[in-house]
Amino acid sequence: EGLDVRQDVWVPPSNGIRKEGDVWSVVVPGEKGEKAFEQFDAVIIAHNGKCAERLTSSTPAREVHALLRTNFAASLPRHVAPGAGKFTLNQVYSLLVEVPCGVMPSNFDVAFVENEESLRSLTSNASKMGQKVSETEVWTVLSSAVFAKRHKVAQEFLEGTEKESEVTALLLGAVERAVCLEAGSLKAVVRATKLQLWGAALPISRWASKDGVDFAWSAQHNIGIAGDWLSADGDRASSIEAAFVSGAKLAEHIAEGRSRDAGLVLEEGGGQFVPVDGDFGSSNSTASAWVTLPSEEEGKGKRGSGGKGRGRKGYKGKG
Image (tube, helix red, strand yellow):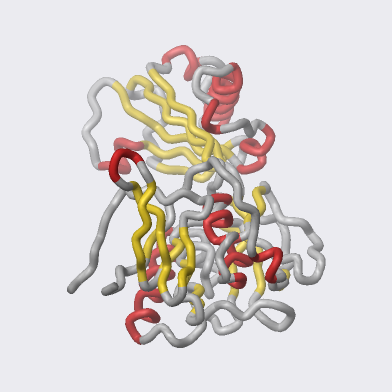
């Protein structure tokens, strides 16, 4: 019958998916704004962070939920207690800056910044998109994780605040120093800015499964995980390539048959969360840690409310 593909469907993180017998019931928007449930053979979580953790907290798939539990930090601890392994994301500020052409240096299109603690990268959007510029050009400034943690606020309420003005000014000053512009020269000519806190930014730990796969799959519950943090290759982790490989490998695994677990061996002797050192974020640690399987009570999770996340549904069943 083919696939039933629907985009931009918001699945609430609180009880958005429920295991009912051999199928999954997924909350989808119904008529007149009411909730509706539809049944699916399988569920794929192509997401991470608080929403993905909450989405699976009330399901019987304890191993899957254990891998989705998330910490947010700029670096990993140097020493980790046995069984305390946990997926960790950093935070990054993204600043779009429109300036007159010729203000920023023309000898690079993208640069990883090493001489400013506040910055991580500078990118010319016009060069990236292959656009012809006339009077102005737009640059993307990405902060370091340490800077973002120091100035972290609720990202939903950033716009129009004093913190937005403060962070924007600090990042513009850091750009001036990084590219050797006179202090205040960039700020004086800025046409427009847009600041966004990327609260769940980049993985600084990856799941290195015992069986060396790039995804996780529970055959008992027909639920899996794909993402750039499930990577058997440490050099590839936390990248677009890692995300693509993870999704493709999981799809192949499902197509070949759903009867075999993959990437889900927890406890001592199983997989481990391993530090990642990538271009956009360093863990500053070498400590790996295995994951304790939650108890059945703990696996039931807390039924909360609020928050938004996008769960990825699996293929639809025949009924």
